[in-house]
Length: 350
Ligand SMILES: NC(=O)c1ccc[n+]([C@@H]2O[C@H](COP(=O)([O-])OP(=O)(O)OC[C@H]3O[C@@H](n4cnc5c(N)ncnc54)[C@H](OP(=O)(O)O)[C@@H]3O)[C@@H](O)[C@H]2O)c1
Image: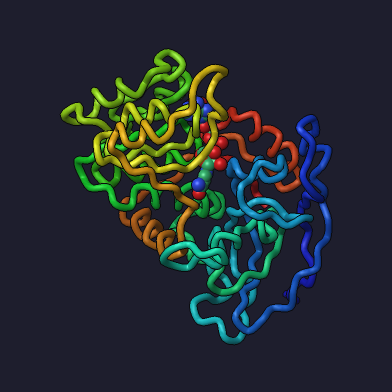
């Protein structure tokens, strides 16, 4: 097969208005592929999965730099079809997944690494072919399909990073049934932690119990769930690590749930702002609860590789929403994902 010189891709021209739908704005185009450099790999992408940032970026609500026009989505998986002459770690036929922040290989973030996100600062994976530097992809977990591997680069690495210091017997709180939270639930159980999960409905309560949650709290029935979670924790002392994906609307309850010297991992803003009249928690709550707040931006390639090893040993599989989508349906899939009716990861087959 001759090496392709262009690829079909979905492209956002720029940010979109609150009234616009993705089906009206996302456009399919042919984009040229760069020449394969000596340390580059060419990947035939076969699957991609959504993260909430894929909504925030075109809606102009993302806190990191974005370049337009943009091929969206960070999380892809596929097969290597060609490698440059100096590539050492891959060969044609290898199954790989993307590294979210391409320049975040190990250690702490820098300005360079924090501005190298696929589907944000750089073109993403909603396309058939892409050229990456050798260090921009990594081997997918053994025995996983491309659809499964495409769920990992953002949500799973973030969850693993949030929990990387957890020990058996400690407690973890996860909020809702989105991608980050369900990976955090699975990782926490695999590491021997006690897990409290919150969710919005009866049907979802059963799903998180089936994944091993020790205690499930319906936050619509129990809006003040923080004290309940604390009492439910082993010895009633509170939660060691709260995986905080809700933002200011859930943070007050997270302060009530966390144990002294515990950690609130600050990850997302999925629950939006506080309700009218409710004050946003701040300095007083941090000092008053004697906890640590740790902001997380996904995680390095080194953290991702540690996670893949753990996944292989523990035999974990991702929770993929049963509704799957084709490449041609990408705009409809994005509109549907924005409505938030999914459980776990929403995947597009490319
Ligand atoms: N910092 C980072 O590096 C990083 C990385 C990945 C994601 N994020 C952010 O983390 C957040 C979650 O991402 P995701 O990809 O997991 O999102 P997602 O898959 O879209 O999560 C959707 C789920 O969030 C839950 N949710 C909504 N409102 C909630 C509330 N008030 N309380 C508890 N749960 C609520 C709902 O589950 P239920 O109906 O079951 O409640 C919903 O199904 C987003 O804000 C995203 O931008 C940040």
